[in-house]
Image 1 (cartoon, rainbow, N blue to C red):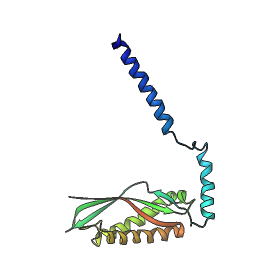
Image 2 (image 1 turned 90 degrees about the vertical axis):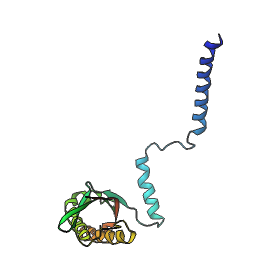
Image 3 (image 1 turned 120 degrees about the horizontal axis):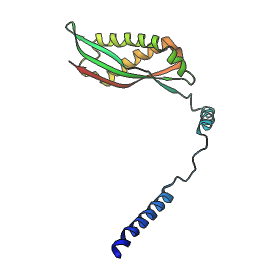
Image 4 (image 1 turned 135 degrees about the vertical axis):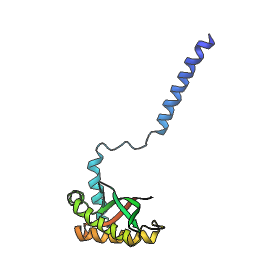
Length: 160
């Protein structure tokens, strides 16, 4: 009889423990019904407090592939993903202008590769600061002050 009752008793104890854990671990504040309507109010309050402008981030759709040349041949490839920090409302404009932006940024990346920027310790902080500055200068030339920063999200070099 005890063999038949023991599994049922274990199931009941397990369900009770699970319910108790759910009660004790639930959030103290209920979630907002419509979080999308709360965000603009929070943004306006944040801006009114004088905390500075808010920013949006735009991840460029495709990675940049940059060949690194040595002795007249491709010695390695650098693959990078970039994002832009922009003022609010500029995301669609960035996507509309992305072909022009990619062309200009690729030229900067090719120049960086040709000057040896991707040789050796290419992820050195000072080296990446120079690259970010050149990319930001290019983005500013295209978008004006709507772009506030260029972020290197991923970078990898594959040697042949």
